[in-house]
Image 1 (tube, rainbow, N blue to C red):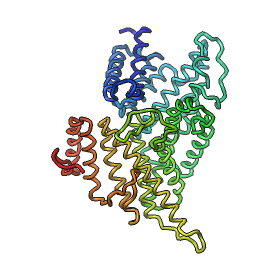
Image 2 (cartoon, rainbow, N blue to C red):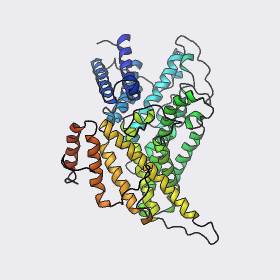
Image 3 (spheres, one colour):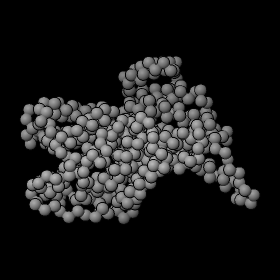
Image 4 (spheres, rainbow, N blue to C red):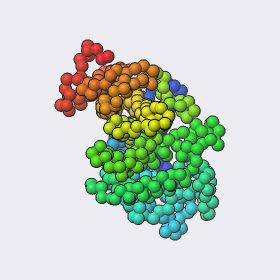
Length: 481
């Protein structure tokens, strides 16, 4: 099959359609999310088959590499072999280097400003995909910052970039929001995020703690310089523009806070063994980053678009409709981090109030923090419940988080062994020995919901093959309450 304009256009269109299926408002389209997901997988398969028909040299063009980038995004968006993203991303980096995308376009005489800008945007997309895949798998990043010199893209709107123009348009200030502002702002933090990924993904973490603190400060400083609409200050925007910024803002902050959590988590977890107060800053950063990562789960009419409903009529923003492992895993890690913080708080030596201080002030502060942590973990559990019930995915994440949360609650002071849930009712007292069976029963309930009997056999097979708790899977006639 040739690589004519028609074939390239069809491949790009199908890939874009696959990327966007999870963002479709099913109430308007009339199709359920599961059927759209199956269509997206068929479109991905068609484009992959077309790419395989090309010769090796025919694949080394800007158009085909663009198609491969879209395919990788589509797989992560619909959860179709998204866990293998690191393999595809590494291959993309090598193909891009082969055609010189890692070198700045200024090195190539006769290259028009239009194609120079396209090459910069494409290169940044590829190394961003490689970085995110490395963070998700714990594998090494393909390149270091000093192994390429391609400059970041300019802050130019697409309509200002003309193919035949001999002169490049004047870039707009970083404070001006354009369609490229997302990439431009991400590019400002690319170097430090690559260094963070290389540091934490080593077989041995050999960096000094001071170096960890330096990397953290560099990232937070660069984050503060970003466009206000991308870091949360959208007060100047109209309601319609604010709604369009929700997805962009959520994704941008997600990618930044994901790095912060990854950087500080090893030192935060070591507090369970060493109780080294040197790592207190990592504890604070992990809790704050986890709360920020889970912030999209907080239902707010001010920031949410219409979306698929769960049984309580709850809607989630566009970011949470993406099915890829990147988002699922980080929400799990963030919620598990908060559970770990709850356990540490239970072990912390309480600070007694000084004579003459406001009575009960210290207790109220601790109680408020604990309530906020519990609330965010419960939001994450509800999110995973929705994924299990609607998509028949994330069973292991749901069950593990359920058990970790119960373990954290079992460590809380006796006065908090029963707490008021978000629905306003008191939950039952927590017995750690019952955490695993309770999680399994709830997972089975969710899998059976919405005609999910076929998916139950796969889940039960996983549970029995693990050999850890073979007796928790109940027959169909067993009550699940």
